[in-house]
Length: 334
Image (cartoon, rainbow, N blue to C red):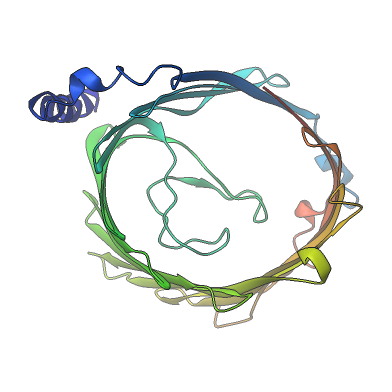
Protein backbone atom coordinates (compact mmCIF):
# COMPACT_ATOMS: atom_id res chain seq x y z
CA UNK A 1 0.00 0.00 0.00
CA UNK A 2 2.71 2.47 1.02
CA UNK A 3 4.74 1.71 -2.11
CA UNK A 4 1.77 2.59 -4.30
CA UNK A 5 1.25 5.92 -2.54
CA UNK A 6 4.97 6.78 -2.79
CA UNK A 7 4.96 5.90 -6.50
CA UNK A 8 1.98 8.20 -7.11
CA UNK A 9 3.66 11.01 -5.16
CA UNK A 10 6.82 10.50 -7.25
CA UNK A 11 4.85 11.00 -10.47
CA UNK A 12 3.15 14.17 -9.20
CA UNK A 13 6.37 15.70 -7.85
CA UNK A 14 8.15 15.01 -11.14
CA UNK A 15 5.30 16.71 -12.95
CA UNK A 16 5.78 19.71 -10.67
CA UNK A 17 9.51 19.80 -11.35
CA UNK A 18 9.15 19.64 -15.11
CA UNK A 19 6.39 22.23 -15.12
CA UNK A 20 8.70 24.65 -13.33
CA UNK A 21 6.29 25.12 -10.42
CA UNK A 22 7.94 23.13 -7.62
CA UNK A 23 10.46 25.80 -6.61
CA UNK A 24 7.65 28.32 -6.20
CA UNK A 25 5.43 26.25 -3.92
CA UNK A 26 6.80 27.78 -0.73
CA UNK A 27 8.04 31.06 -2.25
CA UNK A 28 4.89 33.02 -1.70
CA UNK A 29 4.08 36.67 -1.25
CA UNK A 30 5.24 38.21 2.00
CA UNK A 31 2.80 37.88 4.92
CA UNK A 32 0.54 35.53 2.98
CA UNK A 33 1.60 32.28 4.70
CA UNK A 34 -0.60 31.45 7.68
CA UNK A 35 -0.15 28.86 10.42
CA UNK A 36 -2.97 28.30 12.88
CA UNK A 37 -3.85 25.92 15.68
CA UNK A 38 -7.41 25.31 16.86
CA UNK A 39 -9.31 22.72 18.80
CA UNK A 40 -12.55 21.50 20.23
CA UNK A 41 -13.68 19.81 23.43
CA UNK A 42 -16.76 17.56 23.32
CA UNK A 43 -18.74 16.08 26.19
CA UNK A 44 -21.60 13.66 25.49
CA UNK A 45 -23.77 11.81 27.98
CA UNK A 46 -26.83 9.71 27.11
CA UNK A 47 -29.36 8.22 29.51
CA UNK A 48 -31.68 5.49 28.17
CA UNK A 49 -35.20 5.89 29.48
CA UNK A 50 -36.47 2.39 28.58
CA UNK A 51 -33.57 -0.10 28.63
CA UNK A 52 -31.74 1.15 31.70
CA UNK A 53 -29.12 -1.60 31.40
CA UNK A 54 -27.72 0.31 28.40
CA UNK A 55 -26.35 3.12 30.58
CA UNK A 56 -22.78 3.94 29.52
CA UNK A 57 -20.02 6.23 30.71
CA UNK A 58 -19.93 9.84 29.44
CA UNK A 59 -17.90 10.38 26.28
CA UNK A 60 -15.19 13.06 26.43
CA UNK A 61 -13.21 14.03 23.33
CA UNK A 62 -10.43 16.51 22.69
CA UNK A 63 -9.71 17.55 19.11
CA UNK A 64 -6.67 19.48 17.87
CA UNK A 65 -6.20 20.95 14.40
CA UNK A 66 -3.03 22.41 12.90
CA UNK A 67 -3.20 24.18 9.54
CA UNK A 68 -0.57 25.80 7.32
CA UNK A 69 -1.66 27.63 4.16
CA UNK A 70 -0.22 29.85 1.49
CA UNK A 71 -1.35 30.61 -2.04
CA UNK A 72 -0.19 27.20 -3.33
CA UNK A 73 0.05 24.78 -0.40
CA UNK A 74 -2.24 23.62 2.41
CA UNK A 75 -1.04 21.24 5.11
CA UNK A 76 -3.62 20.02 7.61
CA UNK A 77 -3.34 17.79 10.66
CA UNK A 78 -6.29 16.71 12.79
CA UNK A 79 -6.11 14.40 15.83
CA UNK A 80 -8.93 13.31 18.16
CA UNK A 81 -8.24 12.01 21.67
CA UNK A 82 -11.00 10.10 23.45
CA UNK A 83 -10.14 10.56 27.11
CA UNK A 84 -12.90 8.34 28.55
CA UNK A 85 -11.47 5.24 26.86
CA UNK A 86 -7.98 6.58 26.03
CA UNK A 87 -7.39 6.22 22.30
CA UNK A 88 -5.97 8.56 19.66
CA UNK A 89 -7.90 8.70 16.38
CA UNK A 90 -6.29 10.31 13.31
CA UNK A 91 -8.60 12.67 11.49
CA UNK A 92 -7.80 14.44 8.24
CA UNK A 93 -4.01 14.66 7.79
CA UNK A 94 -2.99 15.68 4.29
CA UNK A 95 -0.98 17.99 2.05
CA UNK A 96 -2.74 19.83 -0.76
CA UNK A 97 -0.88 21.56 -3.60
CA UNK A 98 -2.34 23.90 -6.24
CA UNK A 99 -0.43 24.13 -9.52
CA UNK A 100 -2.30 26.45 -11.87
CA UNK A 101 -5.59 24.64 -12.62
CA UNK A 102 -4.47 21.39 -11.02
CA UNK A 103 -4.95 20.47 -7.37
CA UNK A 104 -3.11 17.51 -5.81
CA UNK A 105 -3.87 16.03 -2.39
CA UNK A 106 -2.30 13.12 -0.48
CA UNK A 107 -2.83 11.73 3.01
CA UNK A 108 -5.82 10.86 5.20
CA UNK A 109 -8.72 12.68 3.55
CA UNK A 110 -12.49 13.03 3.58
CA UNK A 111 -14.24 13.42 0.23
CA UNK A 112 -17.68 14.94 -0.28
CA UNK A 113 -19.38 13.59 -3.38
CA UNK A 114 -23.10 14.05 -3.83
CA UNK A 115 -25.64 16.78 -3.23
CA UNK A 116 -28.24 15.29 -0.88
CA UNK A 117 -28.38 16.17 2.82
CA UNK A 118 -26.69 13.46 4.91
CA UNK A 119 -27.98 10.52 2.86
CA UNK A 120 -25.57 10.35 -0.10
CA UNK A 121 -25.68 7.09 -2.11
CA UNK A 122 -23.00 8.29 -4.57
CA UNK A 123 -20.57 9.36 -1.84
CA UNK A 124 -18.63 6.09 -1.54
CA UNK A 125 -14.94 6.96 -1.28
CA UNK A 126 -14.96 7.07 2.54
CA UNK A 127 -16.39 4.46 4.87
CA UNK A 128 -19.18 5.85 7.06
CA UNK A 129 -20.12 5.40 10.69
CA UNK A 130 -23.91 5.00 10.61
CA UNK A 131 -24.46 4.04 14.24
CA UNK A 132 -26.51 7.26 14.56
CA UNK A 133 -28.73 7.85 11.51
CA UNK A 134 -29.08 11.53 12.44
CA UNK A 135 -25.32 12.04 12.73
CA UNK A 136 -23.62 10.01 9.98
CA UNK A 137 -19.94 10.84 9.76
CA UNK A 138 -17.12 9.73 7.47
CA UNK A 139 -13.88 8.00 8.37
CA UNK A 140 -10.76 9.54 6.74
CA UNK A 141 -9.09 7.26 4.23
CA UNK A 142 -5.46 7.27 3.06
CA UNK A 143 -5.54 8.31 -0.58
CA UNK A 144 -4.13 10.47 -3.34
CA UNK A 145 -6.24 12.64 -5.60
CA UNK A 146 -5.96 14.96 -8.58
CA UNK A 147 -8.47 17.66 -9.53
CA UNK A 148 -8.47 19.70 -12.73
CA UNK A 149 -10.51 22.91 -13.05
CA UNK A 150 -11.65 24.01 -16.52
CA UNK A 151 -14.00 26.99 -16.67
CA UNK A 152 -17.21 25.77 -15.01
CA UNK A 153 -16.17 22.09 -15.03
CA UNK A 154 -14.25 20.00 -12.52
CA UNK A 155 -12.52 16.66 -13.12
CA UNK A 156 -11.58 14.51 -10.09
CA UNK A 157 -9.51 11.33 -9.83
CA UNK A 158 -9.06 9.51 -6.49
CA UNK A 159 -6.90 6.47 -5.73
CA UNK A 160 -7.40 4.59 -2.43
CA UNK A 161 -5.04 1.70 -1.59
CA UNK A 162 -6.71 -0.85 0.68
CA UNK A 163 -6.28 -4.38 1.98
CA UNK A 164 -8.84 -7.16 1.58
CA UNK A 165 -8.11 -10.40 3.49
CA UNK A 166 -4.47 -9.26 3.80
CA UNK A 167 -4.25 -8.90 0.00
CA UNK A 168 -3.35 -5.57 -1.58
CA UNK A 169 -6.46 -4.02 -3.06
CA UNK A 170 -7.49 -0.58 -4.23
CA UNK A 171 -10.44 1.62 -5.03
CA UNK A 172 -10.38 4.03 -7.97
CA UNK A 173 -12.89 6.83 -8.40
CA UNK A 174 -13.46 9.47 -11.05
CA UNK A 175 -15.93 12.34 -11.22
CA UNK A 176 -16.94 14.97 -13.78
CA UNK A 177 -18.85 17.99 -12.44
CA UNK A 178 -20.54 20.84 -14.31
CA UNK A 179 -21.61 24.00 -12.49
CA UNK A 180 -24.27 26.32 -13.91
CA UNK A 181 -27.94 27.04 -13.21
CA UNK A 182 -28.17 23.29 -12.68
CA UNK A 183 -25.17 21.59 -11.05
CA UNK A 184 -24.53 18.13 -12.51
CA UNK A 185 -22.03 15.43 -11.56
CA UNK A 186 -21.28 11.94 -12.87
CA UNK A 187 -18.94 9.64 -10.97
CA UNK A 188 -17.61 6.12 -11.41
CA UNK A 189 -15.98 3.98 -8.71
CA UNK A 190 -14.29 0.62 -9.24
CA UNK A 191 -12.44 -1.76 -6.95
CA UNK A 192 -10.79 -5.18 -7.24
CA UNK A 193 -13.90 -6.89 -5.83
CA UNK A 194 -15.40 -6.29 -9.31
CA UNK A 195 -17.98 -3.93 -7.88
CA UNK A 196 -18.62 -1.00 -10.18
CA UNK A 197 -20.61 1.98 -8.96
CA UNK A 198 -22.05 4.71 -11.19
CA UNK A 199 -23.35 7.83 -9.48
CA UNK A 200 -25.37 10.70 -10.90
CA UNK A 201 -26.56 13.80 -9.06
CA UNK A 202 -28.02 17.20 -9.81
CA UNK A 203 -28.99 20.28 -7.85
CA UNK A 204 -30.58 23.61 -8.69
CA UNK A 205 -32.04 26.58 -6.83
CA UNK A 206 -35.38 27.89 -8.11
CA UNK A 207 -36.23 30.93 -6.00
CA UNK A 208 -36.05 30.26 -2.27
CA UNK A 209 -35.83 26.49 -2.78
CA UNK A 210 -32.87 24.16 -3.22
CA UNK A 211 -33.84 20.96 -5.04
CA UNK A 212 -31.64 17.89 -5.49
CA UNK A 213 -31.61 14.32 -6.76
CA UNK A 214 -28.84 11.78 -6.24
CA UNK A 215 -28.48 8.15 -7.30
CA UNK A 216 -25.98 5.32 -7.41
CA UNK A 217 -26.12 2.07 -9.39
CA UNK A 218 -23.92 -0.77 -8.11
CA UNK A 219 -22.99 -3.53 -10.55
CA UNK A 220 -21.79 -6.73 -8.87
CA UNK A 221 -20.46 -9.84 -10.62
CA UNK A 222 -22.66 -12.05 -8.41
CA UNK A 223 -25.78 -10.43 -9.86
CA UNK A 224 -26.83 -8.45 -6.78
CA UNK A 225 -27.16 -5.15 -8.63
CA UNK A 226 -28.67 -2.29 -6.66
CA UNK A 227 -30.04 1.18 -7.44
CA UNK A 228 -30.05 3.68 -4.55
CA UNK A 229 -31.64 7.10 -4.78
CA UNK A 230 -32.42 10.24 -2.78
CA UNK A 231 -34.51 13.25 -3.80
CA UNK A 232 -35.31 16.30 -1.71
CA UNK A 233 -35.64 20.02 -1.20
CA UNK A 234 -35.14 22.62 1.50
CA UNK A 235 -35.94 26.29 2.09
CA UNK A 236 -35.92 28.99 4.74
CA UNK A 237 -39.08 30.77 5.83
CA UNK A 238 -40.40 33.51 8.13
CA UNK A 239 -38.80 36.93 8.61
CA UNK A 240 -34.98 36.95 8.46
CA UNK A 241 -35.13 33.27 7.40
CA UNK A 242 -35.26 32.07 11.00
CA UNK A 243 -37.20 28.95 9.99
CA UNK A 244 -35.84 26.02 8.00
CA UNK A 245 -37.53 22.96 6.45
CA UNK A 246 -35.85 19.99 4.76
CA UNK A 247 -37.68 16.98 3.26
CA UNK A 248 -36.12 13.98 1.49
CA UNK A 249 -37.33 10.70 0.02
CA UNK A 250 -34.97 7.76 -0.33
CA UNK A 251 -35.00 4.14 -1.40
CA UNK A 252 -33.37 1.17 -3.10
CA UNK A 253 -34.37 -1.06 -6.02
CA UNK A 254 -32.90 -4.40 -7.06
CA UNK A 255 -31.59 -7.09 -4.73
CA UNK A 256 -33.09 -5.02 -1.90
CA UNK A 257 -36.24 -2.90 -1.93
CA UNK A 258 -36.66 -0.08 0.58
CA UNK A 259 -38.27 3.35 0.65
CA UNK A 260 -38.63 6.08 3.21
CA UNK A 261 -38.85 9.72 4.18
CA UNK A 262 -36.63 11.99 6.25
CA UNK A 263 -37.09 15.55 7.35
CA UNK A 264 -35.91 18.37 9.55
CA UNK A 265 -37.69 21.48 10.77
CA UNK A 266 -35.84 24.07 12.84
CA UNK A 267 -36.30 27.58 14.21
CA UNK A 268 -33.68 30.10 15.36
CA UNK A 269 -34.71 32.28 18.31
CA UNK A 270 -33.21 35.12 20.36
CA UNK A 271 -30.78 36.29 17.64
CA UNK A 272 -29.75 32.69 16.91
CA UNK A 273 -28.74 31.98 20.51
CA UNK A 274 -31.33 29.20 20.61
CA UNK A 275 -32.22 26.67 17.93
CA UNK A 276 -35.21 24.35 18.31
CA UNK A 277 -35.40 21.48 15.84
CA UNK A 278 -37.03 18.13 15.13
CA UNK A 279 -35.65 15.47 12.79
CA UNK A 280 -37.51 12.37 11.65
CA UNK A 281 -36.78 9.23 9.63
CA UNK A 282 -39.61 6.95 8.48
CA UNK A 283 -39.13 3.77 6.44
CA UNK A 284 -42.11 2.48 4.47
CA UNK A 285 -43.29 -1.16 4.74
CA UNK A 286 -42.23 -2.44 1.29
CA UNK A 287 -41.66 -6.15 0.60
CA UNK A 288 -39.41 -7.46 3.44
CA UNK A 289 -38.45 -4.00 4.65
CA UNK A 290 -39.01 -3.65 8.40
CA UNK A 291 -40.56 -0.21 8.71
CA UNK A 292 -39.91 2.06 11.68
CA UNK A 293 -40.04 5.71 12.68
CA UNK A 294 -37.35 7.59 14.58
CA UNK A 295 -37.61 11.11 16.05
CA UNK A 296 -34.86 13.43 17.25
CA UNK A 297 -36.15 16.60 18.97
CA UNK A 298 -33.33 18.90 20.12
CA UNK A 299 -32.66 22.31 21.65
CA UNK A 300 -29.30 24.02 21.07
CA UNK A 301 -28.21 26.95 23.24
CA UNK A 302 -25.27 29.09 22.06
CA UNK A 303 -24.40 31.70 24.70
CA UNK A 304 -21.27 32.53 22.65
CA UNK A 305 -20.13 31.41 19.19
CA UNK A 306 -17.60 28.94 20.59
CA UNK A 307 -19.87 27.22 23.14
CA UNK A 308 -22.85 24.95 22.41
CA UNK A 309 -25.22 23.11 24.74
CA UNK A 310 -27.38 20.47 23.04
CA UNK A 311 -30.25 18.78 24.86
CA UNK A 312 -32.30 16.22 22.96
CA UNK A 313 -33.77 12.75 22.69
CA UNK A 314 -33.98 9.79 20.35
CA UNK A 315 -37.45 8.24 20.20
CA UNK A 316 -38.22 5.07 18.22
CA UNK A 317 -41.47 3.14 17.83
CA UNK A 318 -39.66 -0.24 17.63
CA UNK A 319 -35.94 -0.17 18.30
CA UNK A 320 -35.89 0.95 21.89
CA UNK A 321 -32.14 0.40 22.21
CA UNK A 322 -31.93 3.76 20.43
CA UNK A 323 -34.18 5.56 22.91
CA UNK A 324 -32.31 7.96 25.17
CA UNK A 325 -32.07 11.48 26.49
CA UNK A 326 -28.73 13.17 25.87
CA UNK A 327 -26.63 16.20 26.67
CA UNK A 328 -23.84 17.46 24.41
CA UNK A 329 -21.45 20.27 25.32
CA UNK A 330 -18.96 21.55 22.73
CA UNK A 331 -16.34 24.25 23.18
CA UNK A 332 -14.14 25.44 20.29
CA UNK A 333 -10.92 27.42 20.67
CA UNK A 334 -8.31 28.94 18.37
